[in-house]
Length: 112
Image (cartoon, rainbow, N blue to C red):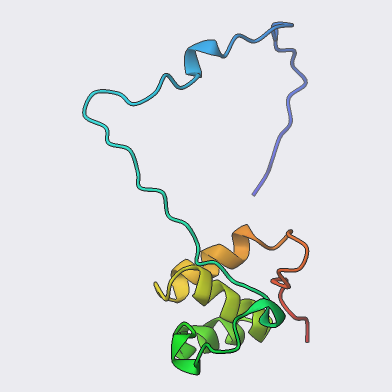
């Protein structure tokens, strides 16, 4: 396979007007998406001691293990499954990818 590079000049304007691409709100036939808020997670030390273990959210361990097999830290996998509301490993994977750069999320894959 051969690649060739051509030395050519392209005229580019100094100012590029993108105002026509700016959103103008809901259009005819569109409907607003619902606001999906992640569950509120309180640190253990601020939780009410009267809460029983049945109040803690259920986490799909199968989805957690699928993500862990991809090389992500177990805690990051649990957070991803929790914050996506147990909607499956694909949604949790997308959450991990979206939050990899955030400090404290520990979502970077572990290297062997």
